[in-house]
Amino acid sequence: MDQWQGEFARIFTLEEARALLPAIKEQFRRFHQAQEAAAWTVEELEAMEGKRTRANTLEFARPLRARREALGALTAEMREAVSAVQDLGVIIKRLSPALIDFP
Image (tube, rainbow, N blue to C red; front, side, top):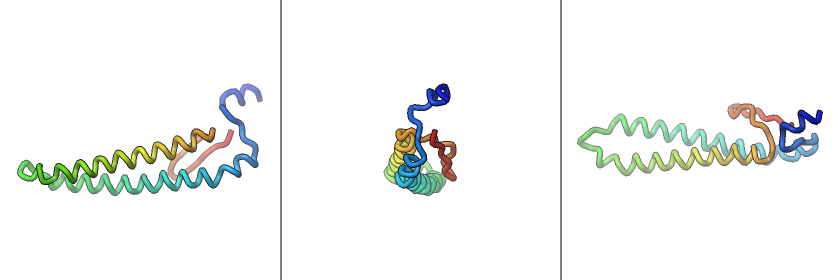
């Protein structure tokens, strides 16, 4: 048992794990919300890129940059949500659908 415990920074009791579930659910909600928005933003980017030509490149420059910046912010939001769960000592096995483990 000592060897198993040495692999993890924290070992949870059942009560501790249950107490953390609301905060963990909120982080996964945050992750999935950002993920959905990122998917929509990628679709917008692809559509805009498909309409861009040499003649209208300047017209699309600002909107494309804004969408790319938005995608970067959404990616950061997803990373922050994952990190928040991992910082609790919880192991994320899968993101969608969420699957976690409490050592």
